[in-house]
Amino acid sequence: MTHHFAARLGPKDGFEPRVPADAGRLYVAELDSLLRSGHGRTAGRVEAVLRSHGRNASVRSRDLLRLAVAVYCADLMTPRRQSYDRWTRHIRLYLALEEPDPWQAEGEALTRLLRFLTGDHWELDIRPGDPEPWPASPEDDDSRGFDTVCLFSGGLDSFVGALDLLSREQRAVLVGHYARGSGATSVSQAAVGEIVQDRYGSAHAPLLRYFVSPPRQPGRDRENTTRGRSLMFLALGVATAEAFGARRLVVAENGLISLNVPLTSTRLGSLSTRTTHPHFIDMFRGLLRAVGLEVELELPYRFKTKGEMLRECSEPDLLMEGLPSTISCAHPEAMRFAGAPNTHCGYCLACMIRRAAVEAAGLKDPTRYVYPDPSSLSGKSAVDLKVLRLALARYAKKPPRMADLLRAGPLPGTDDERMQLLGVYRRGIDELRAFLASQGL
Image (cartoon, rainbow, N blue to C red):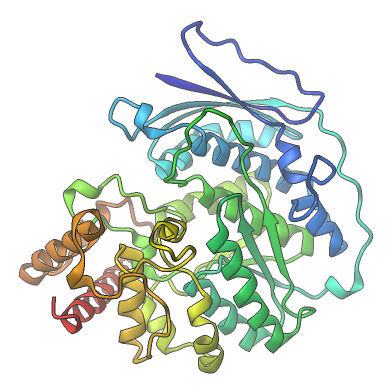
């Protein structure tokens, strides 16, 4: 079954694809209504946030945002359980862009990138569009002098990345994203952003928090894996870098998470994202070069574990102050059923990696976990723990090999870089093993 998804560019775009009579057509609201103010909401819209800093998105970066937002919406609004294997979907995306030629030329590269990112089959039908013009923004002298933009998710890695970057360079633009229903993310971004700005000042570390959320579809279920969000978050970073004249986009993610190696053969369809997997980053860099977006992606922690990031953080006092406000949990909103919304569960793989890292760094963990004792888990809450223990038992007999890493995707780079990736994976596994041992497991 092919899911046909028409992404309209603006109110003047009346495009309707011709699809088989038995195929359902799914429309997203006009893309620019999700990016611009004056369409029922202003706070957090990309245009309004940039304009408040005297900036505007370039045409090429606007088209990247439209592509990314359309993918994000199609991903969220197409439940995987409707697919034959309850995972792999076939999505045909009809997309209007201001300058479609460079994107059409990269059609094959784009579909490969999307297939790796979401695990689905994609078809792209890119056409020219005629959007309402984005108003020019007056130059703001206070916003000059930024060479670097840093993604700032509200997570622990991005918090460490911002602290390390600002301690060296003193100036960087921080970029966050939140959506409808992502209360934990929004709260964490605001809380740790305030800590950073109290130390470095809002003029030196402006935090641009973008609200981009797919339109509500009454009566339709949503997909909860949200792999497509990764592309949109990167696109927001690239658009911000272009707007500020910055040439660097820093993505702070530890190597263990970036590799996203399935712990067992049954977890190849992991719910984890592939935002910073080396193969995806390599393809995304190539796409930026091909369409003329001159922003360099940097992943300074790709060869470090989460524990090593914490242990080597340049601002240990600020790290400890902000650590309990960062969010790592895979499903903090679900903790509302336990009476603790927007709180770490303590038992998902992301929580266990966080807890192992804090312990490996020799820190006292101030984070509140709804279920702090892994040995007390049962049922669905014990699934990640069981899978992790199986993987650790397997690795105890045969340490991780390059073949394990390649199960998650190709690894570009030199032989030395691939060996460094293997090393960081092994050390990350060792952190998890030490944590479980400390818990008597």
